[in-house]
Image 1 (cartoon, rainbow, N blue to C red):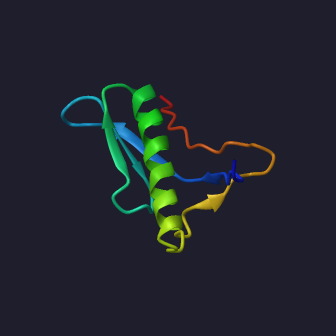
Image 2 (image 1 turned 90 degrees about the vertical axis):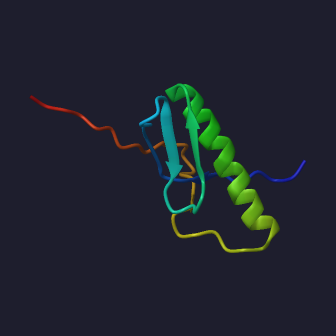
Length: 85
């Protein structure tokens, strides 16, 4: 089995006007999914990003600047919208 590279990619998830959720990988052209639930959107966009990156690598095309090596300590960064009354 080959070496596994881990990357971090910014993802935006928002409610879809038709219902469910739209998840989009920022900076990865055409890499988005629509799902019924938030959990499914997260799973599906993870799969889509993996396929997107793997395709770029197989074609020997450079990864965009938005794709960064993951934090070696395993930290996860996220943006959490918080409403304050």
